[in-house]
Length: 380
Image 1: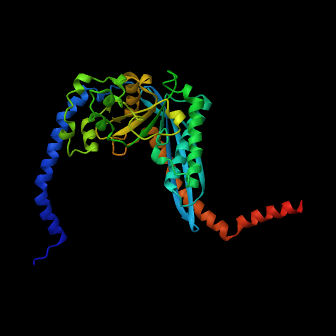
Image 2 (image 1 turned 180 degrees about the vertical axis):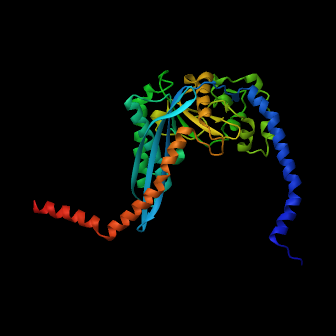
């Protein structure tokens, strides 16, 4: 039996598989190209106009957290940075920044999920500070979800995780109770609070696969965002036509530069979100793309169909697109990118904190300080 090296095996396999792979990919491209115009004509995909001269105040909140092993356990650090920017006749400058941080020990229980909740709470804290100061921007960006998704809600038996969830749930509920009337769309002159996420690429494709002739099939769409029923009727047999085309490849194929999807309800086609008293006012989303090489992202907004229309959604979309200036994969709106630069120090600072903690324990400083205080209380 003749033996072959790995390089030889790969070369033979590539020669066998290449024609088939190329043919399948070309067919998928043709399928996307045949369906894309229908999505556009039905209003499911929209081109977004942007002004030549931009005047805008924007704030971006970036969050980050990290975990380090320390003395047989773990410590964590979590921080959020808000960067305020001014765009005046296309000239960009920073107006200031704010930050919050939290650093402590943490046990093993659901560490990452707990820190996701901490990041949400910190992001809201920075938005609340800005609104309290009365100097809010026209657009405020978060890199955390607006509300707690069902998958983030822990079981009650996970005590530490549940405590963090309750603390974050209360903070979000209190924020919306106190500040909803200051924000757009409830205040037409108020700032727009929007969460920028990279997820749920299947949303608009899943909706299009429904029977859009029925009220049940259309319930996910914001019909105020310009839906054309006559054109949507052409989306027949979509499941067969898109067979083998992944949702991400499809949405990447139909979204060109400066385009977005029609807005959809996020409370209709996903599990319940919390806090329920805040979510009952509605949550909507749409996917968008800035430059041709930019990553597709999702904007999450509070409100319902009666609160948003094509004009107001486009006004949010073009602002998000012009802030996506990196033109690269995993691109981030400019103010959040600046915040991420500051957050790079978090890993290093956590390492320094771990070293300081270890040194303090070895030198017994912590115990001696605690005991000295105890002895002083006994002498009084």
